[in-house]
Length: 196
Image (tube, rainbow, N blue to C red; front, side, top):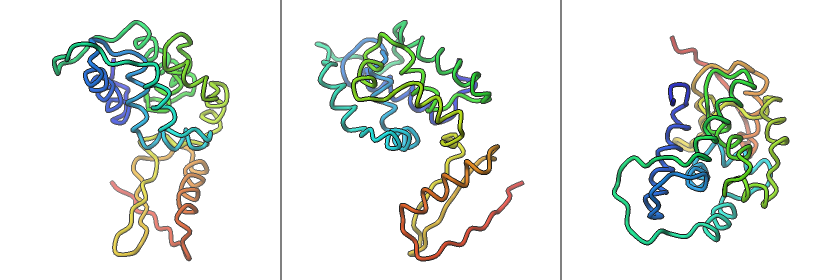
């Protein structure tokens, strides 16, 4: 099932298992996927675009989701039917967007499209709209999480590292420039290195 999932999407699903164990639930539900996805930097940047604070989402989730009575063994837990629907929705969203991978952005969309789960209720409650997210993904405003640039500082110099091959160079450069603007650099030098 996870063949087309990016490393980030796989990490989210592993994190969902850990969240379910932490909350002493014997299953992975949409709420566990939501709590896990809030730790993904790519999803956090998407949420911030829509003025949604991850801490608020987590707080609203924890108001609804109560811990279970008994500790759960540290093992791979089964998914609820709704959680399975989230994964199916994510794969369908990926295909609809003509992507050859399932990333964390698709999982977020899958959570929103599963109308009855705790996660969808919370996302609607805080104002995240499925159509808005789908439109932004279709427009190429969000570079795929495995292509997204990473900024870091080394010896006082802001470095940008990007992996993968961006299929939409304009969208990729918009993301790069947005990230650079957050740092307020006095000058910018961009060089490209092609890896063989």
